[in-house]
Image (cartoon, rainbow, N blue to C red; front, side):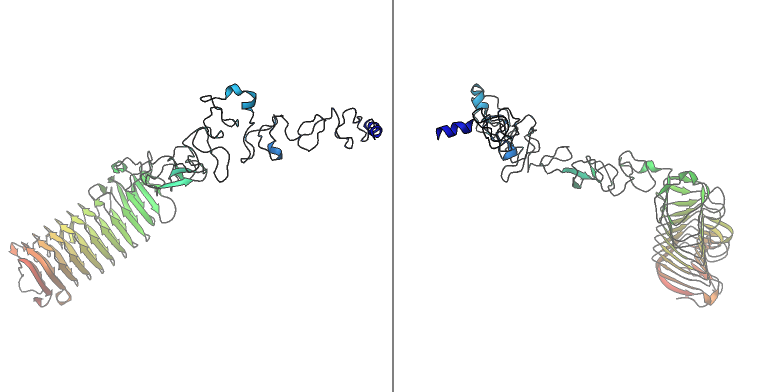
Length: 506
């Protein structure tokens, strides 16, 4: 048997050039022989060195490639490897025992508790989290910063993913203008507060409007566009917002005659030398206050409206040479406006329905015609909380109504003058009611210092708890008078009564 074994050891069974006697560690495998190239991690000792095929660096720890814990078993390995296998070579204590002692410098991730503190070697910043996922504990996304770890409190727009969730807590930027809402926070899924819809600042004063942010150009829109806390710097600008589409600055073309398209025309504080024309429905004109926004045409009429519905508020129509405002066949609404100081009728309307509230009609002069403040024909006029004062005309210094209905509630009709009849109100085939209003100090030359009813039985007038005082014609107290009246009627103080142009008042 011994002889047989010796004979076999001298045989090269696998033909790789080596016998067992010559060091072949597996004479049945031609891939194993002394000096053969070692293929690591294939389960074969190719070079017959006697080494462990699972441990290339020979430190006694198996490579992560074959399920071991050694993350640096070969120079080609790159740290970290799979997060559940990222402990480095545990050989510091064996190779350099002099480097392990209490108080020593403990380099993280080398597998050795060099300072004997009992701490986790994979936790470089000491926050209790490692850069590896260990059991059910998530990995630390920045092991150099102890304030960064899974579950930490996320800082606001600081550029740091404090809680390691890949997101960043930012100010919401709903209008995407680059400036954030100080009251609304939102997580950016990209981890950046510079992504669209997010911001790293809280400087926006209106996060619903993209043209409003610090340093923006001021528009005439009653908004603080540049977020400086003041809208007064919009003065002298004009903006048009169509019913559909984007707004545009129309300041430069607000001269001569301007035809307003459907939408909103905003006129900010200033004097506008323009005649406005509205010939399409759904138009709104907005000013910055009737004392601040003045429409003063170079010639003609300040505003002409031939289509409705139409709305105007917070501006003045003044200085016109051919009447302040003309309305034809339209429904119009004037709120907080001033129609004053015009040559010709202040507000003239034909075949229209007109509502006027919180407004002023004053100092308009219609020489030789009817209606200094207001002329209404074949339509309806409603006045609320409005002053009609110091206007002058041939008839109807304050209001002239023909084939029309007039309702005045909590109004003041004072100081108007007529060189003919009806200084406060002239009615011709008209029906009018003044409720809780003041009719005072109006004066006519011929008749009806207060009211003149010209068409006899076709005229009606009602006073509902209105105040009457000092209305005269020709030096005579004359609150109510008419073509068929035997004599003018004088009322003083708060009075309620009804009148018929033929039968008188009761």
